[in-house]
Length: 627
Ligand SMILES: *[C@@H]1O[C@H](CO)[C@@H](O)[C@H](O)[C@H]1NC(C)=O
Ligand SMILES: *[C@@H]1O[C@H](CO)[C@@H](O)[C@H](O)[C@H]1NC(C)=O
Image (cartoon, rainbow, N blue to C red; front, side, top):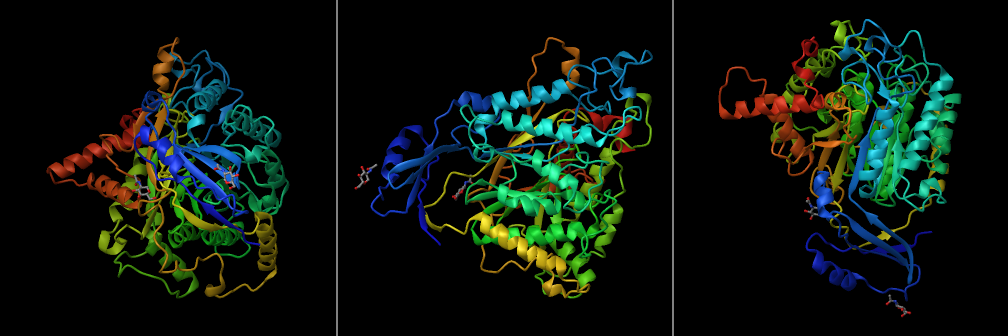
């Protein structure tokens, strides 16, 4: 049953005075044609000062009124903004004055004054978040950002690390902490008056994904359905659409429509792709949960494309060669590429380092081709790169922050070797990026993964707010598609059928975990050309914990660390072409000999990039940074 729905939205970026007039003129009465709905919009007049203070763009939001016939069925504001927050790691055992040596759990008479925990925690101490940091962070977000965003991407790790031998974690504690944080997230982003609303219908949509420390023992997650996937569904019931219960049970992945019929966020369970999960080996064997994850992702992306929707991919562990099995990495990359008409980008946490990583579709296709025989795929000309595996091997296998070699006493358990990691990213990935001839005019050979700062004070606590294009939602005729319940019922049947096929060597052409080539007549999506939902800029927030420790009377607040369009980064928008430009410039900073203006500029940019990567802690200048 398809009903026609007409969506009319005014094009309105500009002067406040004209807006009311325009809105009235744009609103068309179509009561006579029953079954039609209307949406009309205008820029919301907001307190510009408040937005400038927060490093955000004022007058960016639009009011949306949905009419069914003559009746107003919904009135809401679309801000064109979302929050990405990750790695809270709240630690109920942390105590002010407890020593770093004891994970901030117990005091130690030997500890020097700068080796003990302060009220909001200490960067580079190796300790998790004091409850006060976690609570004050969410309160600050509620007071300052909640009313300015449409949805929240929340990429996991809500439990302390398992790094205190005297107090090992146990399963009950992990479930219970996840439950507490989920309840808190629900209430923090609830608008006044929404108490009686079904959580899934609330204005601010929240999309969690599973972290490697959210499971017991850490990193280890079995293929579903298991007790863990069921428990997790209960914990996330306020975030996971009911009709996805069964697919969720397969492996704790799901998606949400964050703007109904327009924009979705996919939550990927990256633990099935993660090298450190001992229960997963690769993504090419049909029995592997990572393989099944891509099967599911394929169905979902196909449906979202059919519905003309756009989508963000999100998850905990980013697709960096050191993290993922190469077959999982390659598949992630080719899916992001072949759905470049709808995928806006991908968002991750886990690393605690603010940085971005390119994915090269040509290399990834080659990796897949090697494994599965010849495939017909689009190339951008001959590539002289030898082997993709070399890239993987060039990346040293860095361990988790808390399993590192011992440094000086002050930095026991603290991060080490992270500058070397970023240099690997620069020299192994940024420096290898091809020019426009091989990358495509809009850089469509590539896609990007964005890793944000964590709340946990590995470095300083941070998170970011993205702003995206909502200035124009054009007048269009749209179909209403089958209800999601029906889609998921069908999907269940198809996935079950795929499971029962026991052909081991299925033909590449039938392998649903390998994406179909994007049809040539589809235009590039919001990641590549400016359009609805294109990312425009983001603002990164942080707390200077060292300052907080030295000023006991300081009132807790996050401050703007930087925005992507500031004097340093000077990014006018956040399209793939902008990231390519940025990455190429950063790569140039490694040039040794040249003493020209351009190289000097690149070196300065690299310094800024490092400082931001470690959230203004100055970590990059410490001896442990390069180890
Ligand atoms: C729309 O048209 C209907 C029927 O002609 C009329 O009753 C109603 O008042 C109109 N609504 C508006 C907002 O003009
Ligand atoms: C936003 O998208 C519209 C098309 O919907 C486009 O015309 C406009 O240039 C975009 N704005 C920016 C700032 O890129």
